[in-house]
Length: 372
Ligand SMILES: *Cc1c(COP(=O)(O)O)cnc(C)c1O
Image 1 (spheres, protein in one colour):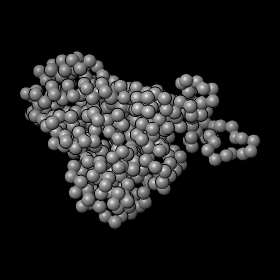
Image 2: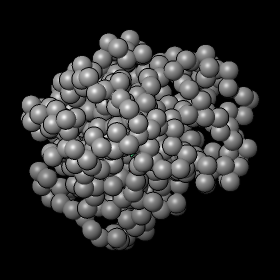
Image 3: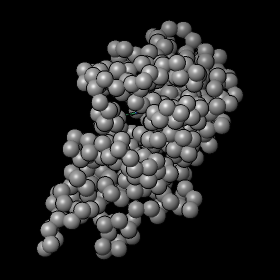
Image 4: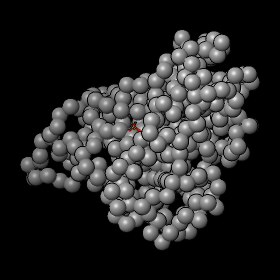
């Protein structure tokens, strides 16, 4: 079955005894116990499992080509559950421009827990290899990275990790499985903030971890989901399944409109530099082409002048809203360093834009007038 078809049909039959075409929301926190007593796999208590969560987990696992998924209350809760599956003293390799929230979480929680981390530039797989130690237990990949849009070669990093049986996790929030399938390229785990393109309408907070195969590491992540307790509500899981049905078509629109906007920005005289993996001028464009089917809806660019000039541009738009985050149907942009705050590695003149699904000509007209 192809991606679009799987997105529409997967998960509907799970814990859906009425055979409703669209399964109902199951808000109940508790489920009746069999006369014979509680059996393995029975629904019992909603923190451990809920019909809507199982439906969504099944759906996202199928779309990433994984065997199982665990859904969380946010992307960062999913990331924390993965790192808490490691032991104090273990070492991880992380991109230096990892999603800013994950950097703060690692520094503020996981280093105190006893994890050791190297934050490095992962555009060169040889540099990743140099940082591997005997205690390295996880390599974290985020490609395209945020906000510098660096590309990591997932296949090469996975090959050198596999030689040492180190699992690789890929944060696939930006590309989504429509544009990139890390498990096919050799990664063991995929991470998502489903608050972004899966939700797609800026109204759901969620996260997920998908595993290629069942193993001890994923058992620990599942345990952290159920006993750490950062689980999503049945209502949010239901809404996420609903928006995921149209993910493939929304991503096609994001890909197409972002390419137009990137080409417009690249030739604009007020702009110093544009990073979009689909542009031939992107430093890792060839690697992006090898591993991505589309280049997504995110663009970063540098305005000529100062940080103040960049701030002026973002207040000049009429249609494009000033907001953080990404992946909604509406276009948003932000002065990234101001948004990330302390510890930001974003250049002061950098603007990050999430291209939505408005008509691209309206967007380009708004960009034109914002630069005047
Ligand atoms: C937003 C985001 C996260 C964190 O997800 P939340 O749902 O906000 O907790 C992690 N990784 C990337 C790449 C993101 O964009």
